[in-house]
Amino acid sequence: MTSLADLKCAPGGQATALDATNIAKHLAALTDWTVVNNSQGNALQKTFPFKNYYETLAFVNASAWVSHREDHHPDMGVHYNRCVVSYSTHDAGGITLNDFICAAKLDRLFAL
Image (cartoon, rainbow, N blue to C red; front, side):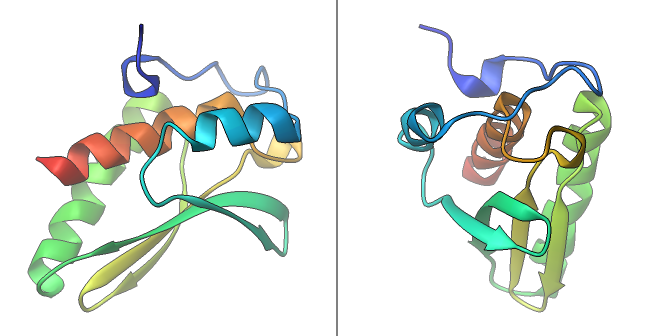
């Protein structure tokens, strides 16, 4: 079985919003991600904890590389010892498979 982290994001404009059943299914495959409602609708969100600002920024920079390769970018809140990451696909109007793929890739990155 292929994990979400092994998949590639669909090109921009080709991802479609998932229904609640598929969101719940994919959410079960992730660690500590939640669905939140923000100013732009539903999003996947997780807070990644770190020991200090240096580790936080190292994660932000590594996640930027993932975002660039997938051409799918999160909203991030960068703090001294944590980074809050939110994924949603604005042009699809909700959470898509692309959001889950990138969330899984960040989980894999965080585990290193």
